[in-house]
Length: 204
Image (cartoon, rainbow, N blue to C red; front, side, top):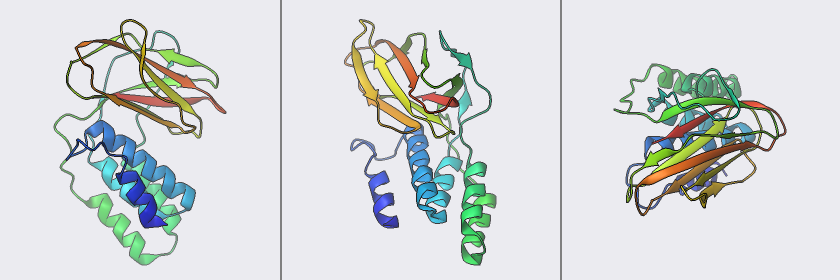
């Protein structure tokens, strides 16, 4: 089961990407973390932490038109490792691997995903000012919440047409698309409940 979950997560990487983008790595690490926590599997959680450690997210200044600014940062690798440690209990071998991950040097990325923190009550939504994406280049938007809520994501072009959405029931939502031409796109985040939460929105 553990290998199946890991393989399933890896299969979510876009076929065109030999090396996943920082935004995609953020999504993959969050999904691995969620799967590991649900299964009580410290190895999956450890894998998620190691992926997240390679990110170098940069705080942005893009405020939502509606909604409340949140505080903090995206889920960090330190928090993930703490969860893995709790799940490992008294397993000396696993605890050793977790300790190695704590002190392991990281290459990081030259320019990590830009993130903004928002806060939404259940049933509320945030709309962001239009953001420019280049034509012919793969564009990515990703949101995640630490709380067990349900975030939905929609991306609209300058004519108000929906070009990408993620409405599955989870605290994670990802949109990736290739604009035919450069232009402005509006990002909408909805919290479908059951609880309010701070969330991180990332773009490439």
